[in-house]
Length: 165
Image 1 (tube, rainbow, N blue to C red):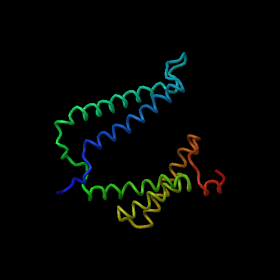
Image 2 (tube, rainbow, N blue to C red):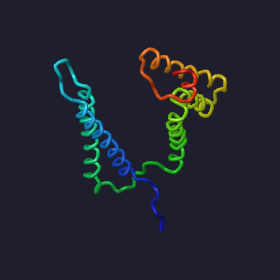
Image 3 (cartoon, rainbow, N blue to C red):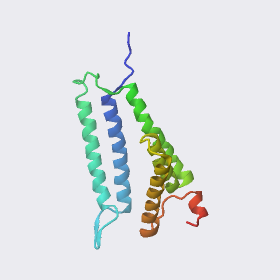
């Protein structure tokens, strides 16, 4: 007897909808905390995020309801991804997770430069020089935009600390 080792589409729909449901509840709760009303001088900080959270909540609830209502009609044979498709997803997911973790150690600028350059070499087959130039250029542009022009500090690593930022 052959067992079905594939992840069914309906389970993925429920998982993604549950994640959106959680995010929407977080957004709504925090919007209420910071103020979601229209004040005398205009909208409070949580005004627009509150309504975006409500839209997310409605969409997630709709997907959950629709998936549960069609459960009996669905024969469960629609597969979310085969093994080779999961492998392709992991080729993007794992480096992205490493990049996210590297932000806490290296800071966002060095981690971004490394991430962009590595992907250009690995996936795009660009030269090391061109990849490093583009990675450095993007990080420098982000630094100028956020740190200099917007005066909005982003997570720093040891190099930015060493340079006095």
